[in-house]
Length: 203
Image 1 (cartoon, rainbow, N blue to C red):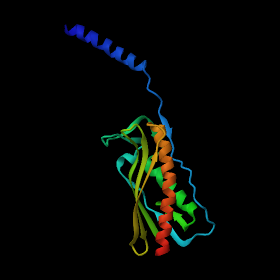
Image 2 (image 1 turned 90 degrees about the horizontal axis):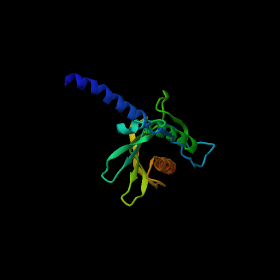
Image 3 (image 1 turned 180 degrees about the vertical axis):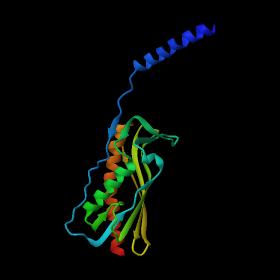
Image 4 (image 1 turned 60 degrees about the vertical axis):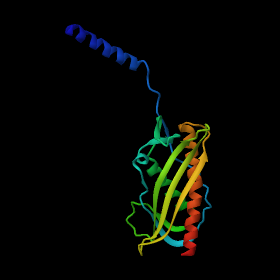
C-alpha cells in the first residue's frame, strides 16, 4: 500500500504542474503617473524665497507599486495584473516638484535630497490614493493629502490644509482608475499652488 502511494504521488505532482503550465497567467500591465499640468508659468518668481519639499509621508501600501481599489466594505486591495511603474509616493513627489517649479511662485524649489538651506519647507502626508468602487456600479479616484507650510529658518508653522480631490472613473478597473487618478492629480496641483500663494501673500 505504501509503495503504491509513493508511485501515485509523483504522477499527481506532474499532473498539477501540467495543469498550471496549460493556464498561463495574464501579463502584468504597468501604468505611469503623468498628469497634464496646466499652470500659468511666470518668468520672474512671485516671491523671492526658496522652498524645500520634505519627503512625502504615506502608509506602507502607497510605498509599493500596487494600484489599490476600495470596495463597499472599505477593504483596500491591489489589482492582480496591473501596477504602477514606480511607487505612488515617489511619483507624486516628482509631480509636486515639477508643478511647484513651473508655478513660478518661488525663486527655487529644492528637492528633499538637496543640501542647500531653504526659506520654507512643505511637508505632505498622503492618506488616500485609490479607486473607490461604488454600490451603484460607478467608481471614482480619490486623493487626500495634508500640507503643512513651515518657515524653515524660524521653525514656525505658517499654515496647514487638507486637500481632497474626487474624479469619476470611466470604468471599474485599473485602466479607468489610473486615468482618473491622473486627472485628480492634475486638479490637485493648482489648488496647492493657489493655497501657497494665498498664505505667502498674507505672511
